[in-house]
Length: 497
Image 1 (cartoon, rainbow, N blue to C red):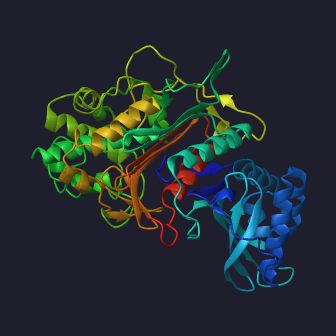
Image 2 (image 1 turned 120 degrees about the vertical axis):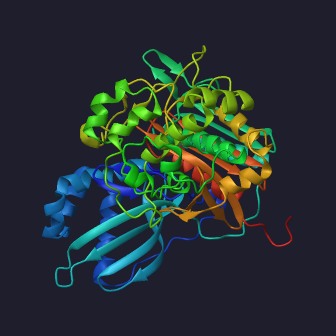
Image 3 (image 1 turned 30 degrees about the vertical axis):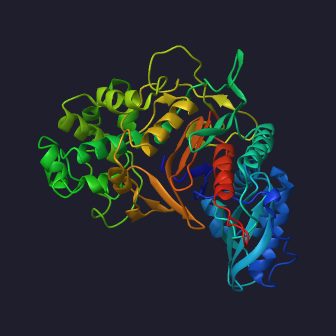
């Protein structure tokens, strides 16, 4: 799963940027009464009315009568209705708060999404002749909030707001997990909610370990940065130089460690290949992934664009093994987990492990009614590309070890977290997502998998660190992290320090 989460909601791809909506308590702007009187504006108004009913029958009838035949040939009215219902379950009702652009046939509006208390966009295009049926409709969410100088919040107020928001999302069935917020090493909030297991019923706790998904790519990035700092590697080294036995040397000569870390290599994603799925139980080391990726043609010229692919990071794992002379797992334990004091990460120690619950069925079809336990247990060890389990406290220990330079020197950390390339959402550095809101910089990583949705955000200048771990794959974890981004990057009021 790419960072800066893309949620496949039914067959509708929703791009979640790494930002958060403003809560009501953050003075949301007034409702916009009315849309442009245009063909696109009228269709958008009617679609919003149908969407906000949240009823599949109303949405099906709307799609059948308002979408163009070309659109319905791609996706049926019933499938479109299910997708919109799925959106409603994740985002809540939508209200128009501003028009960003409009012509007679194309309109883009800013919307407030009630459940997640966040900002998004709806873009709708219609045909150029009567009856101006809808050709396409796209919804975005978790977008940066319009700047409003509502003033900074103190830690006590932030904690109270988070407790309210967590409870709201848990009651709506879109969040179950743990949230921790630290400020200069002190705990602002450490709260759990929901169930780690439902048969028998076991509540989540601060000791519960969760599937990390791609959050653990940060560990791989830090391992590479350590080896660079020791002079054993360069970010510009080619793969061919480090791995002379890599099967595809023609590709290896074109790729650098920089390309792998920043997802600009062009190596296709191996995760969804049938061959990998059939053989995944036999994978034991980073080199075992090579048959599923080494002989693929590159999707684009290295460095020419960004495309998230876990293949990059399993290849980095093989590089760590070659340069360090240790297995990837031993290196990670000795030089990251042990140094940071991460006692419960990827280890066979006593303590609860959350069962992941998914709302997706076969072929990623959404279930509009209920959660299902993921048939495979969490991957306790993970790989250089993701997986593994940890507590929120262990991840805060990792963050603290980064910021106190136990893992990397200040100079090495600065190099690793400096933005390098533009991504779909924000920018990418060496193993971390990078963002800047209202002049406040933060970096981290998210993770999304069947039954897991996580986010780690680190604010180096203000001293905040955020860990959100969830054992459901609905919108709640993303909404909480997004909410915190808004709270922690609020512009100060005039005269406020």
